[in-house]
Image 1 (cartoon, one colour):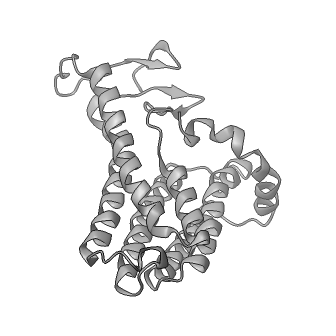
Image 2 (cartoon, one colour):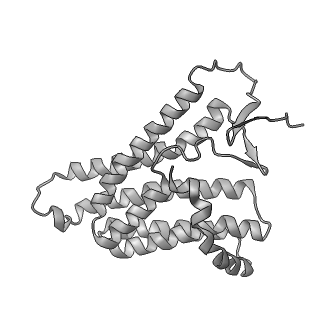
Image 3 (spheres, helix red, strand yellow):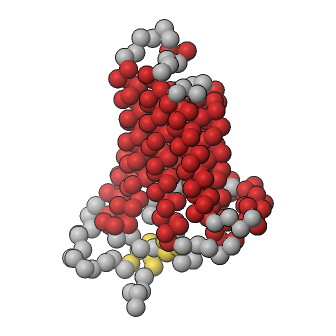
Length: 240
């Protein structure tokens, strides 16, 4: 169980705002670009140890990230490239924000660690572990599509083979970074992210191993047409 698996229950409050944004005629890709620029701005602020304004900017970036898909649906402007570029922008923001926080250790020492003489390498290692965990946690899903051959679809959209698997994902990371920046405990947040994202990635690997570990590799050119969607077997017809 994670926030992503219950996202539809938590984002209902955004619908009226999404409708207002959709009426402006702004394109979903432009919203993605705005979210990306704000995320980069947050990373720069974090790098200079301006944690509070950085957290506020990151929260605004996250809000815009929540709206682009809804605007695309309302205005009937959904596209494969739009979904792709949104996903890529998210990964860049994740990595650059954590990198920015890592660089802040050269600018300032957190007040709650002022009496604990930790070498700079410890801060860099914590930020690096958080980056690795965040990347691994998200890239396991596309690998499941590409290498395992998962092709389940619902309402024309590819389903998530790891829905609800792993207790810590991108929303949890975002929330912790925002809370850490607002309260000043940003490095505590980074440490929690470093531990939890990697544990969550291991959970996903174990899940896929248990589900597909005993299945033989398919010959080149063949795909597994039988998949499970919401606990039921489905056969995906070949595209013509």
